[in-house]
Image 1 (cartoon, rainbow, N blue to C red):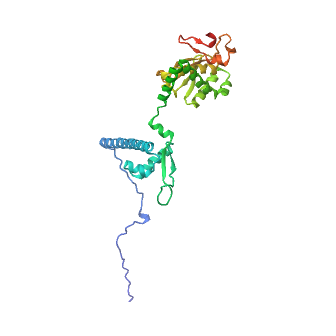
Image 2 (cartoon, rainbow, N blue to C red; image 1 turned 90 degrees about the horizontal axis):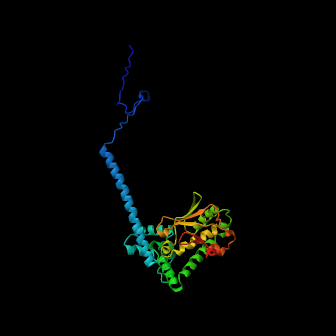
Image 3 (cartoon, rainbow, N blue to C red; image 1 turned 45 degrees about the vertical axis):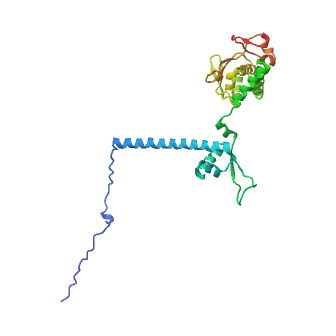
Length: 300
């Protein structure tokens, strides 16, 4: 009798990973909920708080930078370490402000002299304010100019002030005479004059209005002085009439409290008899009289 071999199935622990055949489609369901009103309010409050903190930080930086600049003004040339010791802040923070002042053109550096320096190594870097940096703290140039013109008026009379004002404008426009002469019409020359004035710091522009052009100067470097000495504005108007080749009318001035200095330039040339034959000297003295009439030296 043959012996029968019995096969016994051995089973183990359940598989931790299913076979590929047993894996079907698996769907991932994401539950999207809506934020409560209170959560939205909290987020808005946090955003506003962050913005306020950022603004406060920038304001703090501005105050510190101004303090650093003042120290350079009063104690410069000075090193970053000395600034840090004086203000009681870290040298790293001071260097950040000093580097910003240098990048903005308000400060510059130079190496300290070797005389009196102890130890080895590179010379210390000294920081000083530039002219732009000094402008942070204001100038008394306007007061000086007013005092000088007042002295001139007292010593030599009002005519001396007028002569100074005319000479100043003659010098200014002389740098641009070739470009102005190339304009064929007063309107074209007004555009050239606006560009020339902008290069001189007046931020000028023109615009067509009715039968003429308006020359607008949005900045006046001598506005504070002209408030006390209107001869500066009068000489400017006369110079405009001369270089534009036509009469002009001053409508507004910054010195008088207006937003811009505005001058009307008509499109057509003046039809006054013999106007084209007048010399430069006669045209230079052209200007409106106190009664609004246009006068030249030929009228006097």
